[in-house]
Picture 1 (tube, helix red, strand yellow):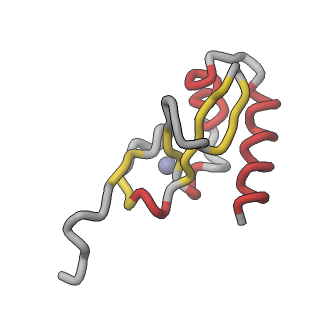
Picture 2: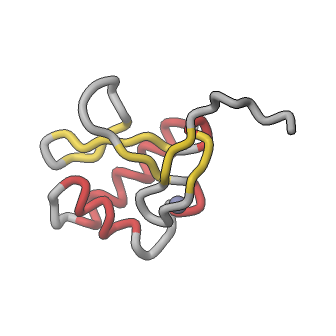
Length: 84
Ligand SMILES: [Zn+2]
């Protein structure tokens, strides 16, 4: 009813559910390393509920074309802490 018509909706790469863009974490991979979205290049979204999801490490590995899932997950938690 009171929902804004032009609020952008984006999909979480892990659960594939759609959310308002403003509620999602926007990430990108640069040279195999996970980073907060810096304004250009390819990015992807993760919802907060999926931070601890068992499929998240695999999705990050896929997005970053990296097998270092532990490093990627630690970096993800760092990004979230710094963001808040
Ligand atoms: Zn999700």
